[in-house]
Each structure stands twice: as C-alpha cells, then as structure tokens.
Picture 1 (cartoon, rainbow, N blue to C red):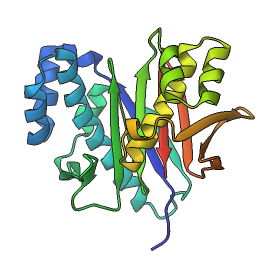
Picture 2 (cartoon, rainbow, N blue to C red; picture 1 turned 180 degrees about the horizontal axis):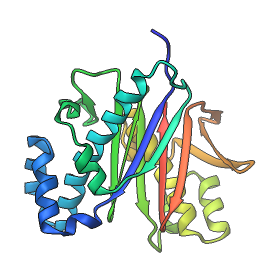
Picture 3 (cartoon, rainbow, N blue to C red; picture 1 turned 90 degrees about the vertical axis):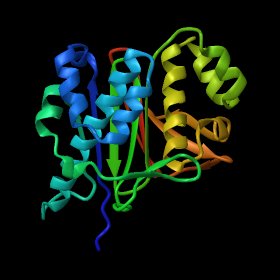
Length: 234
C-alpha cells in the first residue's frame, strides 16, 4: 500500500446552534455517545461545542473517504475549510460515525479504522477538527490577556524571552497551541511536554526542538478572529 501524507483540517462555529430548532436537528444526528456527553454538560456553550464537534468529525471523515478514493489524489495534500452548521447537517451521513475507543492515556481513536487518525479541539464558539494518515493533534485557543507569567513558569527560557520581547498574548497562545497539539498528537498530554518540546521562530516559520535536536514533524498554524490554531502531524 502506498504511503499517504494527507491531512484534512476543518473548522466551524457554534453560533447557528443558538437557534433551538436547529440545535435539536443537529442533536438528532450525532451518535448516542456524544448525545450522552452533551446531556451531561451544564453550560450551554459546552453543549453546543459537543454537538458541533460530532457533526464536524462526521463531515471530515466523509471528506477524507471521498478524497482517498480518488485515483489521482495528491499524497502531500493539505485541505483546509471553514464550513457552516447547515452544510454539516446537510452532509451528515451515519456511515461515517465510526466507533470511537480510548487508549490508556485517554487519546481517542477509531476502533475499526486504525489507519485513520483524528483529533478535535474547541474554544469559545469555534470547533476545529483534523484527520490524517499519521498521528495528528489540533488545538485552538482564543487569546486572553495576562498569560506571560505562565511562560516564565512552564516554557523553555528561549520561548519565554521571545514572548516577553513584545509582551504579546498572541505569541503566548501561538506557543501554547503548538505544545498542546503536539501533546495530543503523541497522546502524552500538554503537562508532560510543556518544557520538553521547544519552538523557535526561524526564517518566518516555527521549528520544533527536543533535547536540542530539530524535530521533523509537520507544523501548520493559522490565526483568525483573535484565535490561534495549530496542527501537528507526526
């Protein structure tokens, strides 16, 4: 079997689901395990995120299936799309709600489709999803003020100094989402790797280092509407 190096990244907002009828429609389409998860959420924002995540994952899996069945698909293709809730609802196909299990570290995976890797993240009204043929991690965060001191405590000194240079919350969250995405891709979790994986801006692109050695995984970054989004594909 030929090696693929393809990655699909999609994002959407929960805004439309504030309409109760649309929420009920979206809720009716998601798998039972995700309905149960949404029902347990006390905050409305978390319910919207959970339901939206179910629709978005279904959509991304469907798009992945279509692309990989194309004979001439590009092996190094990276697809990115912002999609609205109505499109997610209209495209929903229960066939693509693959059964999900969790490893010992809590990382989710498709039980019967182990060759497909996925990850989901949400922050405020945004939900993002990534699917790839290698382990992937995604993190999205809305920039908030007053986080520079955390960099001094938990980041490598070179990262903390880079953030301090312009006292930038945006720089903090750029580094944070990269670390979070790496932790999710490896299954280690962010707390275990905060000071171990180090990111440096070199010639306009982020490069990763561990124990002083450059790392060769794929890094994708995007900023929009005050949010930072990072994807790591191992």
